[in-house]
Image (cartoon, rainbow, N blue to C red; front, top):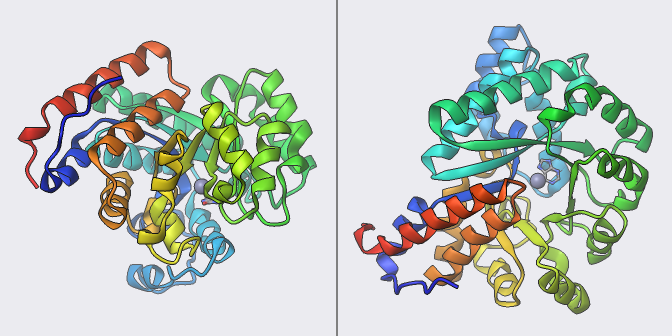
Length: 350
Ligand code: HPA
Ligand SMILES: [Zn+2]
């Protein structure tokens, strides 16, 4: 293992920003900034229940996951055309490249769009074009993960998979998101089995607000390869041992957890506990336009609040590459760049 050099505390934020990293938990609809929501509403003739960008932004005061989801789905209603999905994806990838994201795996929620009459082809086509062009023009690698909305039925999820069949070459995997409580992973056992048989990777949100039992069933029933959030695992010692032993990555989202009141303050976030227990945790932004920061902001704020060190930073970035679904050769290249960033750490200014 690479020996992480000592990094003076004042240089740590600059190192966090400069180090290459992968983002594995970003809902692309959650990257829609209020300005873009208004611009798309105007372009598409969609009426919004907010008078201005400021009025919309001031509605971003959440008390839990559901209070966020209500406004998040309303924001996504301005997306109608292939170009809209392209613009949204491209804007996120440009922003992520500025944060030295080498690779991003983008969640998208097709049911939010197909329910409004938008075709699957429009959604996947626009997002895929953004990924292809961003790689060529910005050098950022990316991939798409189709998420099923867990508050909807198994039947609806199967219909969505059916609609996605012609575009499976543009999708690396499936996920499970939306309202967690009352919608356990086992509700989607058969859909996930079908997806895995089709060669798709599987991930699932579990243990954000829901109990450790949902993490167990995401692993055992859905065969999820990563757990999105997973922070409630600390309440189950046996589960913690399993996650550590099997190196199952948790895609942790500190600012999301703060804004949705999963933790009362960032200082009380359990990221350090997860890392120190040997879990393959990563840092991600979840829905950056809604939660007050992109990935680097998540890194710098959670490090400042919890006293994480350069050794943790290296581990988090390394975990993000290891846990990604990218080709092994890409992972090795990014991990080499990561080491170089740490070797140059004396160059970074606070
Ligand atoms: O954090 C989240 N949890 C569940 N569903 C979501 N959809 C967007 N963000 C989230
Ligand atoms: Zn999420």
